[in-house]
Amino acid sequence: MTRLHAVVAFVVAIALPAWSWRDGSGWLAWTMFSGSQTYRIGITVIDSEGGLHVVNPTALASLASDDAAIYLTGAERYRQAPIGPSFRSNLPTLGALACRQVPRAANVTITLEVRNSLDAPAVKDTAHVNCS
Image 1 (cartoon, helix red, strand yellow):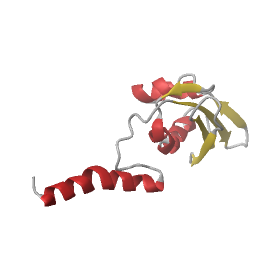
Image 2 (cartoon, one colour):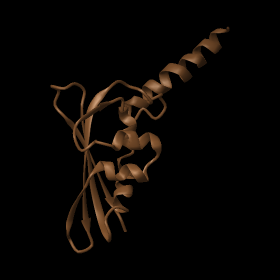
Image 3 (cartoon, one colour):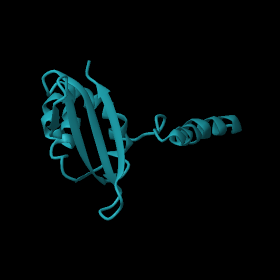
Image 4 (cartoon, one colour):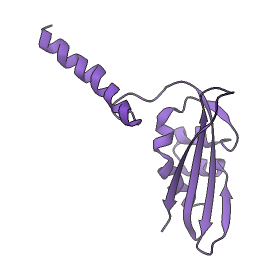
């Protein structure tokens, strides 16, 4: 292996994925399993008449892929699973599924709370989705 090959391998395999974590997404890094955390999901929908509806994450499981359904079932309470940052980046997609759960849904607020350990403070991420 030449020195050029080693430099290219380092840039492609180490430097670029590490750099992609700079914005917090890790879009160039492998994020499938990044450790177990506890998490819960809160979903509220406001319909076109201003009515507030709370949607249970388990109700979205039937509309989601099999993999996502596993993590949505029971997520109204803290669950432990290896969700990683991919769940956080897909909150708008989950919000779009919640739009389908309530007739005449206008907008959805979906909140993901993640704790790195049982006694750690929760880190909240919220997405707002317009259903129109």
